Image (tube, rainbow, N blue to C red; front, side, top):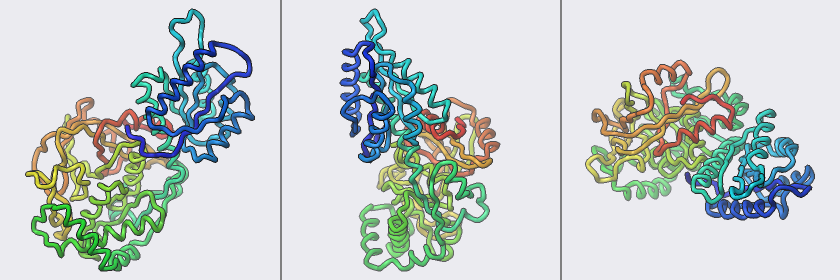
Length: 452
């Protein structure tokens, strides 16, 4: 798992006021922990000495805040004061990671009680409902380092939601009320701020993009060498205006992601669909959701913070016991499609329903492991689902973007039944890679229910 956030982490090492346990082993574990953190690519802020009481603990937490740390790692290579768990919970609001290190195997006496100590902390944090992740293992172990990176990414992602801001241009698409979002519930449940934006003003912004900016972006599109199909260069100018307008709006409003009411207004009022622009922006790492689906944008933002990469927002078109056919009308990012110029590579086209440009046609790459996930709100709270599969040769050819995903570990007829009775909207998001365990852990840290 990549570590997309380069802010430092705070390392809080719990010490002891009184002598006890094997302090030589304590030093060895601390040194190996430093090596592991460096190997994982973390920038670390630490006090000069381990903390031993409430005063030194609070001073360390103040140091972490002053240095811009976005995550906290608690290391306890010898059993320390369990009361400090409550001091940390009271003075560090975000989730944290507890790391328990192993005993000295060649010793005939207990060398550290590190796992006992961190178990004590975990129990206390759970009692006061403070979220945390738990890692146990030798700092030199590859598995331990992988677990550490995953746990830090989960805590960072959960913490980042508290300062995240999403924009909604217009509302959910007409009739698609399963994607409606509640501004206050979003803030209350996850801490995310929602910025409502005018669809009419967005349309005016698109039309007002200066010719020079449009022409500069159009050149970038032509340099992609996409199969133009029936489209001409003149059919691409409006999508370049969409692209520029969306980037400018996101920068102006300091948005981490945006959902846009595109269906059917934009094709009718601007004259083209924005899906080529959506595809390009998504491929560049921007969070852009179609049809006003704020929770889909939120899902993509969480995945980005977790290091899961780029997502494809899609309909759940059809399924059988072992597989699902996913489809959407031309918004998939290029990195999830076949190479440009290949027989199944992307091509530009008119929308299949309202015959206007410009959508990106083409199947998703096959023989790729994927995770399908979705955050959604229902019953006054948020929920998260996730399952894994493999993209295989599609059952049939469609316009737009599509993929057949085989799922080996569950009956998809039964799973779909569970989904719809849980209120899952008709959009889900697909990511390359296997991430369901990480997502399940994130749901636990966020305190939301999990549908796996």
